[in-house]
Image 1 (cartoon, helix red, strand yellow):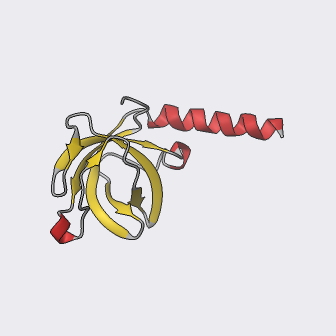
Image 2: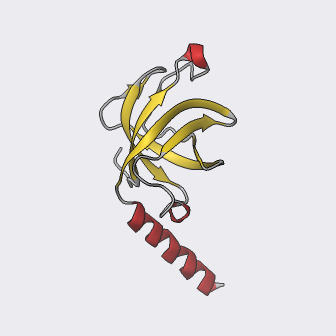
Image 3: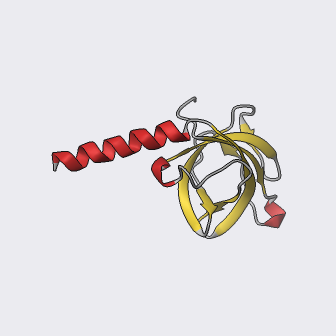
Length: 118
């Protein structure tokens, strides 16, 4: 599944013994991307593996459900947490921005078009 890719990250899932997931994650997994005290939805893509087991570290692509909220705030080198509700199941660092700027621009244009139709 190759969809929109806003950022690339290095992601480590906590082991089950350390409070992480009990089952593997697969492309399409949509936990919260937590930074600066807020949770945001982000859809995961794991390009190098079929599934990610608890305790694994992988490269991943994230696409945000609200990309305009992250443009200018998310930067390479920025740490983040992966959460399921209030439970932290992983952590990582943003390695590079991919299509975040264009995703944010498209989302902003769509929101403006909807507002002007009301």
